[in-house]
Image (cartoon, rainbow, N blue to C red; front, side, top):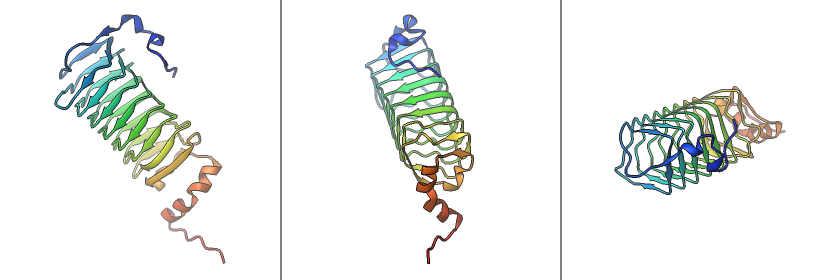
Length: 218
């Protein structure tokens, strides 16, 4: 999936119109540009639809976007803190240089989504479905992927720190490009993942402990 690095590179850039005012529940945002806006606690846009829209240098704090749909959304330099993205649906979208902290995204469905140079801290993706999702040069710290389904997910240049994978299902999930893989749990869920020989050596002690293998020289 080709990802635009600048707003002008979007195929629908010339159609965008600026957004003004608050967000609305069940809102319909088609070819809308959210630029340098702040949305604070109490605002809600649950069940909304975002189509071919752009979000640049915005701040979302304590906002609910639960069960919203994002099709061809492009977000750049945006910060999301304590935002509810639970049960949202994402298709053909990209987040570039964004920061997500304390975000609830359990039960979300992501298809053909790219996260590039993003920081994810304490993001709850429990039970989410990720299909053909790429984390490029990202940091995933204390991210919960427990019971999630990862199909065709890649992590080139990314760091995984204390990531939870308990009872997750992996299919063609490629960890070979990750610069660090540190799991808080779920080593047994790595079945179906692709890892490098170096990563296997790094993970060997934890894998042995998970399988009950005693490694002892002598």
